[in-house]
Amino acid sequence: MKKLIMLMFVATLFSCGASKNVRTKEKTIKGNWVLNKITYSKTGDYNVTMFNDTTKECLEGSNWKFVPNNNSGVYTVNGINCEAGERDFIFVIQEIDEISGYYDFLLKPKNSESNIGFRVELSNLSESTMKWKQNLTVNGTPFIINMDFIKQ
Image (cartoon, rainbow, N blue to C red; front, side, top):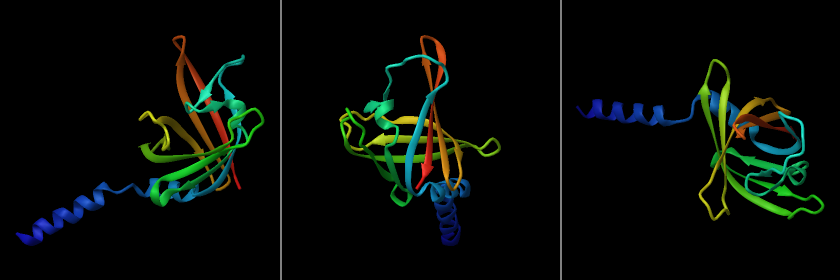
């Protein structure tokens, strides 16, 4: 009986861990990145505040550091006419569909007074590039914000 209980306990522990695919993504994302370019799915001038923090122009060129072993990170804004400084965050990568390679990426600012997180799609990740897509609805129509990163 004790062996059966111990076996069930060990099986439960292993089933709760991140999948091998997620651990691989976390290993790849580890390190320093630059948010190189932000584009929109529709042309035009938009007044977008990214992550309830700052504008597209201020985030372009920002430096990001990901530390997967404690799911934390920091991004640094340095642009002219921007509120410069470091912003701490926590993140979680969740595999949604192994076949399609669809992963959700949840980013939550640590110093935010609200308990709001931001969900983006981790649509592409290699050793040197990463792409996020944030799917929104604006005036009833789909709107996508694309964020392209380059690893340093």
